[in-house]
Length: 143
Image 1 (cartoon, rainbow, N blue to C red):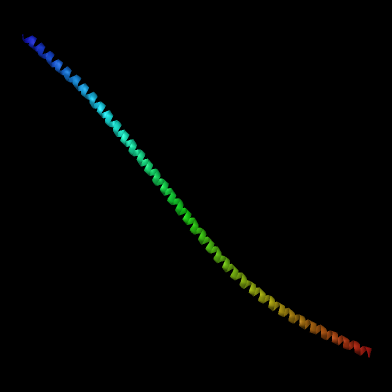
Image 2 (cartoon, rainbow, N blue to C red; image 1 turned 180 degrees about the vertical axis):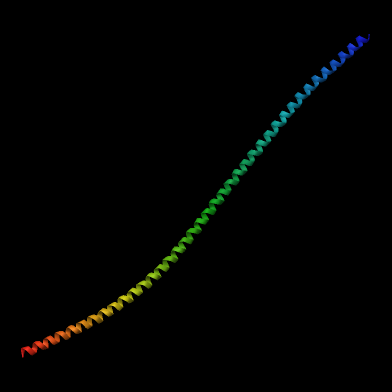
């Protein structure tokens, strides 16, 4: 009887273990399904957040590019104004220098003309004296 009881007891234990194993595998399958669902939801959420962040970054990049273009335009405009002002100033200075040089050239030309006039007058006077002396000699010879 003892053998029968041991055999029955061993079979009950084996059946209990088998049932526990089947339950455990079933529970593991349920847990795996829940984990897969959770992973899917987390992936979906992450994808949405990434898309939103990418969209926001693209907007920010566009705004930054627009600001940079505006600043470049402003800097170019300022540089053009500064260049124009500098060119105007240089042109005025060049005009003044040219005017001064023309005045000096005019004075030098005037002085040269006076000197030439004086020289011509002296030369004419000398020639006139020579002609007068020649005429006097000619008149003396004719008498």
